[in-house]
Length: 258
Image (cartoon, rainbow, N blue to C red; front, side, top):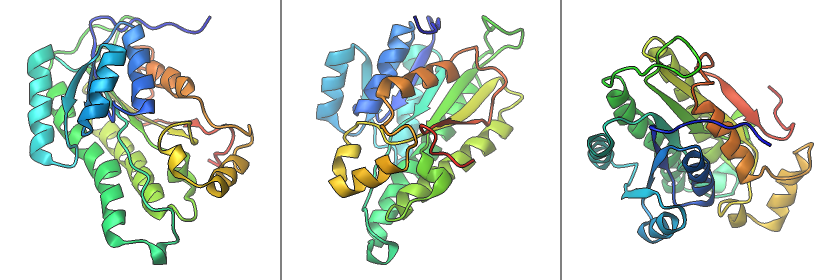
């Protein structure tokens, strides 16, 4: 039997909530008793996710500052507080050497994966700071919230033909550490994880050759399971994670070199 967490009375936002990884994370949060709001720009997939999970939803373009601000304001108004933010939204972009990539695609990847995470964090953490700290169930130190950023092992290592994706995820890790330092005395815990590839729609975008290349870099010789990502996110979203702010947690099956 796995570890269990009590997130009853907590409310979470999961960006990219209509995708496979977003749904898996949301399901774990719901099973732990949290209320969950899924954010995504894909209205059709979002409706499917809502029907599957029973979570509330909000159509949000996270690259639009005004849209993010409106959504954050509405979420706080609806729920009274937001205790957990999962910055999960991301796109892969072109799989090409840098001299063959288009500036438009490179910019789009950074806009979604990094700038979007910045906008959502900016708005949601701004609200978290204003809400009263709540007594922790496991530590004497009150907490206001948890932010978990879904980065990637490629942000640590870089990877050929993935310059935009790797750069965006490296930036997300740096953003994690900076925001963690800014909120360290506010009861807001900010962390990130660096998964290897998972069996999601993003993984299905790549060629068989590229898939074999990625798999060959993982000492455990398999992709990470969505449930394995969700379980780590669950701990990082709970009161049990109370002193690890700024931490970057590996989920690479041994691929990480640092």
